[in-house]
Length: 188
Image 1 (cartoon, rainbow, N blue to C red):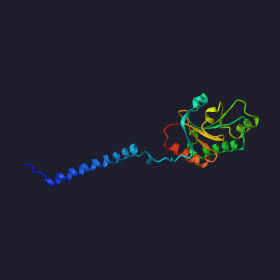
Image 2 (image 1 turned 120 degrees about the vertical axis):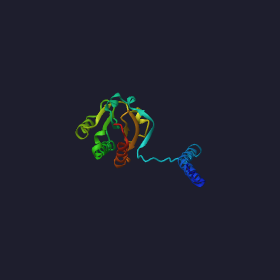
Image 3 (image 1 turned 90 degrees about the horizontal axis):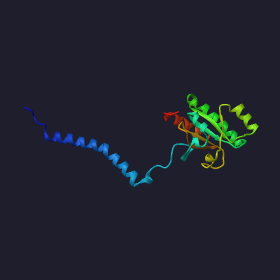
Image 4 (image 1 turned 180 degrees about the vertical axis):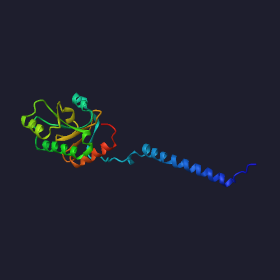
């Protein structure tokens, strides 16, 4: 003959079951309500130090050669010649990649320049920045995303130019972004 559990034990177990369900459902309900009814509560700041480009610029619209790189790429658009800020940006991009250590091979550098760069600039690239690939292309699409100061663009392995860094954000802030990005990225 089976004995029945006391009624208070049955109610206790049912209350525990309902509490467990509420623990799972209530946070989802609160989050959904906050998202739909209080959108101003959402954080507006991001942890990245670079400026996001919205919408992204497809790399193939700049040059088909960019898609052949198949990795993360730091793009530096330049004019026919490179001034002091431009040279500083080239230097910082090289140092950032060196500073990435074991992940340095996951990022490449490319200089986007119009046809016919100056001989002085070509010599500088050959002697100090031989790892930077020179791609002859029109920088018009990239110029629309920022003001006229020198910048570095970040392109993902899928060919999307998605972020840029000004001279003030190049260096350590950019390296922190790239370290974080490469840590969480499964591509490239």
